Image: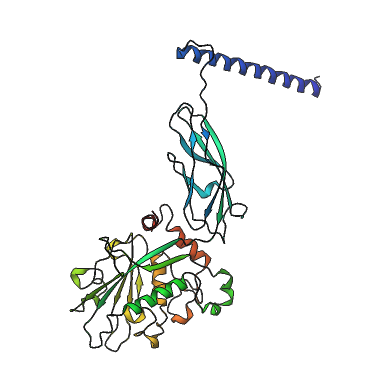
Length: 377
Ligand SMILES: [Zn+2]
């Protein structure tokens, strides 16, 4: 009967022979390949893996998909190098361009809400450089994220479609239009002064969307502009929602919707002055010719004429409709901007979840990726 020790020694012995066999096989392989290349030398040329020359640590500001980091490696044999992501605690957060080595985030990082593995705003990723002979080397890269950059400043064009009414009310002033931009930059940056009225249970998830708006400064022809077009609609055709978007039916054609947020202002009131249709906003991915938001002039901005009696006097119709344009759906969350049929003074906040939704539409394959690319290139 064999003892346990003898079994172990047999196993070890077997292992030893196996190792020797492997050494022999690899020697033979080396000899064969040496003979095959016809060099005739005694020392075979050994391919060397690429060497990284880019740094292993890097700092970047938050709210951008681009890290600004470029992997660079050199190859002794001067073959083409392909870069890839091969590991690291935060590998799922990154993309790399195989040929250029440019490293980008899948979701733009947020300094206040880090999503790296150990939540310290230091993202760890292993990148590899592989040459044409399949030799590769690795680099453990650390990207430190600091705050606080605005994700995107979106240029707005306002198309005013007005009637020749006695008071010329619908041809709203530039001052009234600018009062709306002020509201948007407060609401989307968590700077609205009525934040104190947010429902208690939602106070902890109120968030800064880190998106801003400005009137377009350059029109599609490259000319300077104040970002406002004015169209006298003699036939009142623009009151029909399908005509608003088209110059040949009383409205105004959209400016390229992958470069601007188009806002159409129209007279949506009936003969008693009640606003019928209200506003609407198109979700990402729809027809580019109708992509934007539509707001009745009485609900736009905070300067008269505003529909005070209908509680549309604080400019929240535009905040809500732009929320749709940024892919937000309605929620049954009291005091949220995306709640429905509530007066302006009860719409006060966006949530962290809504911010994640909005920011994801600007990422690779997102519904407004093209807009983001055009505005940040
Ligand atoms: Zn809505």
